[in-house]
Amino acid sequence: MKRIIINKDIFGYRAAIIENDRVMEIFVEREGEGDSNGNIYLGKVSNVIPGMDSSFINIGLEKNGFLYIDNLREFEEKYPEGKVGNGGIEEFLRVGEEVMVQAITEPNGSKGVRLTTNYTLPGKYMVLLPNNDHIAISKKIKNSEEKNRLEDIIREIKPDGVGVILRTQAIGKSVFHFEREMAYLLNKWKNILEKRNNSKIGAIVYKDNDLLTKISRDIFCSEIDELVINDEESYWEILSYINTFGDMNNAKRIKLYDDEQDIFDFYKVTPVIESSLEKIVWLECGGYLVIQTTEALTSIDVNTGKNIGAFGLEKTTYITNIEAAKEIPRQLMLRNIGGIIIIDFIDMKDEENKTLLLEELERNLKNDRIKNSIVHFTDLSLIEMTRKRVGNPLGHYFYEDCPMCNGKGKIKSKEALIEDILKDLRETCKDKDFTKIRLMVNGDLYKKIQNEYLEFILAYTEKYKKKLELLKFKEIYLDKWYEIILIK
Image: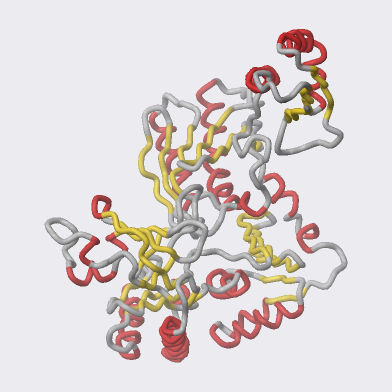
């Protein structure tokens, strides 16, 4: 059974996809906060870098967006054969000029959003390409007769100068569904152009739909057995969308949850969220995964752990690796991990086992809605793969950088901090305008200084005729370990 569970509360929306009682995906949207991906902004060119064939665009966010020449529609139109031997980005963009751009990624660490002028407006059955004249059909639609039928319909109803990508959910739909959605998307594009003419730099002229609409549009389909939501207003909103653009039969599977128990607790989603924020994931066989994400990539290390096996090392390793190959795609979906991913499976000698492992991983990755690709499988059982970045990772909504370590995961040792204190004291003792030094430190540091370093520090300050007063902070500070106060 496949369910979508949606929880609405004062913080916003959270949703989960559950397959056969296992939580497979989690979505979060905080109140007043949304994704940048898919939004269209009125921007201003702040810098053009010919050497990188790119430009930075001010779109009103904390960091400027990044527009590469391959994502510039004007370049594609003039040079359809590509970059080689043709003009650079400076031919199309000038510093200070306005440009309407669409975000195709989220900000990532120190990087701003990636931008394009190949605009897309998604619907339930199609994606409108308002400045293109191309017709494409989802690769998941395999039947050639159906592909020809759909293409004929679109060619008949599509205005000149716009393109369409037909989505998987278009299978079996009639011309009525496409005409209605085409009119809706064309009107949306018209509104975008009108809003552009009356907007200032940094304005969002089109905001991709909220989580509720994205689920109704992109995920809820005939394969979903039921959609359960705990908010009545949102319940009617979903029904309205389905009745307008979806299949009326799907509306029967939408249910309103009205029990007093938290809906995520009832469907056992909460403990999955908590475990998905942990670094270690235990496997049923006793092995475990270690998942660590940096700005550049995510590494996943597979370990046998408690799985000591009973069939020899190769068999034990194979069993652990196969179970990891089933769990890793689920963890990528749960945590919404994107970018470069390195998986360090336990090394195996049997080539057939390596082949079976790769096939198992590929089979489970096919369940992921997000585009992914295995790039390379090395002799050391390292798998290099990529997964498209869509939205923010799960941890973005539940974690923030520690003010003590600034996100490094480690803090200075007490010895290193005392060394810093001594350096600061050497400088302050040279100041002849002060006779007393008050050293404020936190509790743990206070004990270390009292027990091991106080005599040395007192001898040093007395040498410069300074009186030292060592005190503990009355409160616990999360942003400083010590403070030196000079007193006349």
